[in-house]
Image 1 (cartoon, rainbow, N blue to C red):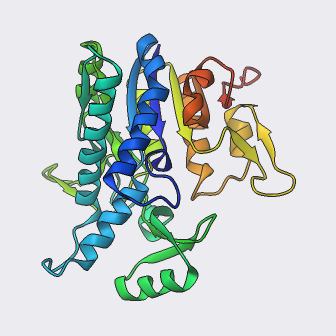
Image 2: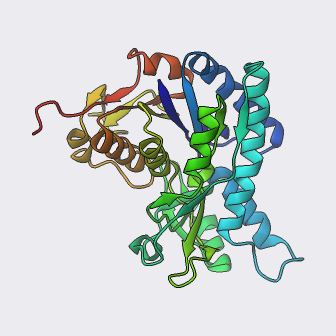
Image 3: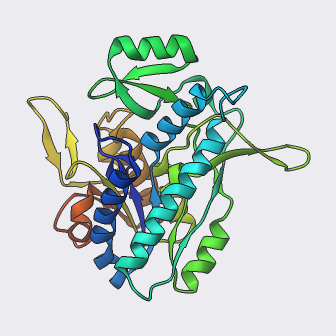
Length: 307
């Protein structure tokens, strides 16, 4: 079975943790352990988030006196793809001796007129108190919004239209490689309408929506979205919270999940299932093997009564 795995950024750097390299390496060791059993039985493509990492780089860039202007988000996204891709590739190489591992920088085409550029919703970076977040917003020109535990920077997150390196990923899979790609949703680019020349844009593409598009284009059988909760919850964080263990795309679309957290995950799962007739699931990293085998997480399946 061909599986596209979308790792949440918090799987690589947990909320409240120091963003040290050693901390991220320890978390990636856990990722490799969780995915090794799946990789021995199935074809895997691994994508990953980069919210904490790109936020850190953006802060460092904004504070660097050697720069006349901070680095743009597209280049910072490429840096996180390289850094996290290298960590994953090395760790998976150790966990899967003899398996070919390829980490690929990928670019995601977006529309220059996407309305998301006017409505930033994608959380990046660390959590701040309200006063600190507002001070940073004034100083650095950031947009900020309330997250589940505090305030964070939000940036534009246009919809992915096409992944430029999909054919290369397909060739690597055909040759037996496990591929790490589309990190942070891929480096966002637009194309000149006359020449087709590519240029980066100030945005971060949602990695779950990119993973769904990649899974569709690769004709994957299963989209596995791994996060820091065991399943999707209806009315999450309220006294009426309840787990959703089995759902159709229509069920998810009616759930009212927020843009900044579970919303993109449920939308990605719904899109993949609707467009391909395959299966998707959302659940906890440590339960990856159990999720694929139907013993954990939220399974998203086609609505068999439709049509």
